Length: 501
Image (cartoon, rainbow, N blue to C red; front, side, top):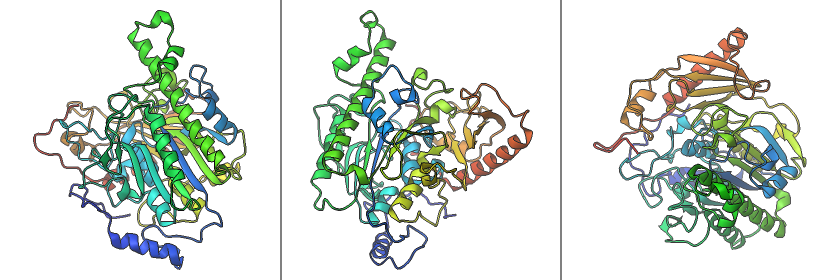
């Protein structure tokens, strides 16, 4: 296990040690070494695939037509599913924004990286969390493997895209970045808080999903060497609130009689945002086709967590911020011609944390060897074979106490959830000093066991009926929880900073 780092110390403008980067680049050129305590490279495939990851924000399991959703129109994502594999047990790594993104990029349970919950950008809160420079991301691995790398859209792995003292997208392997720290401000329509490579771009005209796709297409088509493989991380602001979408789309989802109903209007705007995002994804896919890039491109779509709307998560229990299935089980679609068969449906549990090892395998690179990597290479699943995991899928979200589970662990069809006792600390939406101190020593004290294939809504606790399985999964959950919390750093909070949003 790697030595726990101390991210409370300010990072330099380029906090990644240049010696490691230079050393890895020399390895990429010589291919003389196949393993080291960082990112080592194997002999790359003859034609390494391009990588495109579309990440939606707060889109629920039941929102897409291909997942049985009848309310929101998602023709382009439905078409993508028809040309690849649709995962019915795809999991985000956390039930809210920042930890989910940290795990996607690192292949690690997010608490290991110190991202325990979303990063609050309010100047009244002074949230110190960020993704440490010592973490190695998919983008860094691909950059060292000769890829052009691009991030567009929501970043949410620090609180200020202009701060030279914390790692920025370029410090995590992205040659180019265009987007926001968190949500689009004031809404998705005509946002004013986008940045390009660390510089504010000022007010923009249009909708966030189309602005990021426009920029991604421009980047793709103006690269100096169009023959180089590329990684495009397209992280949408939609469908996180505050919502903004074309009025004609909103009108599709709002009955005239409900025009004065605030909750109905909110739902209509959300649905319109998801449809608008679907059309933006379609434009990017069309450009891949036009440029003859689709056949050698691994394309993934999923959502960072469940929706705020319970109806969007049905028939799953819970919603965003919950470790119940509705908070973490999300739509997940992959198309990779030659590896996925059109129209495939897989119920094998796979997750965002699996993307780093899978992409490493796809391009001939090895995951970092000096730290736990919690994901698995899912290529066997694409062949219809079972997936063997070294580490079971595990979630931990300290903010849930009482009747809501704080931890989850899935093995096969079985899901165990674990609960904290109410800690007697004033509840806080963002992380603060009190919660930071508590979560490092907090223990899971109560557990429930569910068969998610027979009981997708998690209504029947089978702990007493399956005592051996229950005890084995409980022991593994407690072991993993203690391990990741021991590795996760302690953040220091500035004296006098508020703990409330």
